[in-house]
Image 1 (cartoon, rainbow, N blue to C red):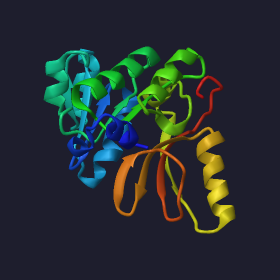
Image 2 (cartoon, helix red, strand yellow):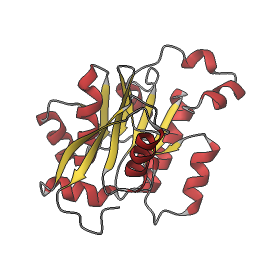
Image 3 (cartoon, rainbow, N blue to C red):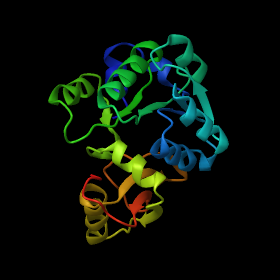
Length: 219
């Protein structure tokens, strides 16, 4: 939904027009993978993290990163919250992720909000996302910490799904991104890249993180 209905109800739809770029809360390995693939099409992507080691790693990767606390209004402003089209929170802490996208909506009226939650997340966190018409990142619960560890260990590689036009091809692609061990990161549609969100359409190109070794803890 990307928050359009919420903005309409609150009289803020005009302020959402012309917004672009993505703020990623967190600069861990999974967040950096997302940033690299999202920025491949030239879009502005900014990471925000207060962990000095993760900030340094992001800068070494050539990514744009703001060092600081996402709950600091000045930090969010420096990251571009007033112009961003989306905020994607992918720290290893689901509570922080939900509070971060909630703050982005309150401070910057960001229309597109996604937060990573795990299978063990409190049900109330899902309710908060529903209340602000935000989405669960990757379209399913995800253990960010486990993915970070797998990436650090060199057990993850990128893979691509090209979605075909037949009903069977669409169903198979949807099954893989919803139920498979691979994690959908970015979707390309009509030449535009954005954080993954379903449903899929014929012609979509999805970049996934694929485990070379699939430990049961990554889900």
